[in-house]
Image (cartoon, rainbow over all chains, first blue to last red; front, side):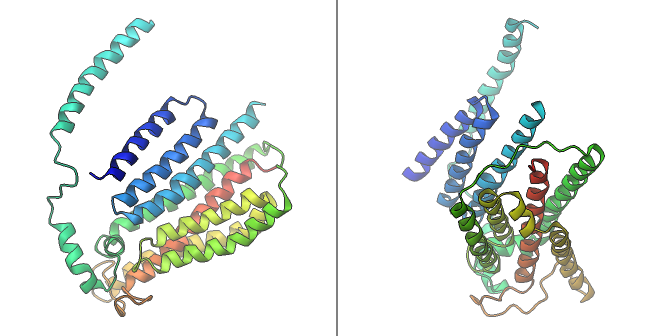
Length: 79
Length: 241
């Protein structure tokens, strides 16, 4: 295991924990998106660039956005 | 249930789980250990057999093309289900929750609309080069959809719905999904197996190469891009001002 791999695994463990421990979904989505980006970097380091590209587009852009829209909708309904 | 009972239950579960997990991880093969022959075999023969340089694409769209067909229809079905639920609810309940439109600077809006075609072209580039470089139809489609997402973030609802005309998108989504199956059936018609590669393979390293791999990549790009934009569009209609 190279130094890059060790560093990225450590960062992924940190941000996965931060995501789980963040209680407010509105805030939670940001460490989650960052966690997605770290996963993309990990896939790149493990020489899987195809998966990197999917994870980047889906995990860091589309999913966080869909979650944010859903949260906005729920907030609007509560009012 | 008191907190103490709950904690006891939690501990009774988590301690054995932890022990077994540590035991299992300790018994794993070393990092990067690869026993199977298939990856090595595919790496050795894919480029000669299918004239593509990206072996992952050869596996996804040719050797294991049937699996990818299933994956594509997962997305297709999800989008169809989303449309069914959200539209039905909007029509029967009639009321929409309004959040009001966020004000955006003109420059941000203009920039997002200038970047949209650039991102769309990049996504298409990604899809057509699926056989040559990392990426392919799915990645290209997702990139195209993210361009539309940017257009919404920069320019708001009216611009997004004006660019992404849902009636047109639905047609292209269905065409993309159908094209994959039609290519597979065409192989059957020629007396080959379903999804067997029957198109001219082209020169190794050429843009148009890999036979059906190239064609299916474009079909998948069409389906994924339009499917994701439709999903975005349906979500955004829920919070329309």
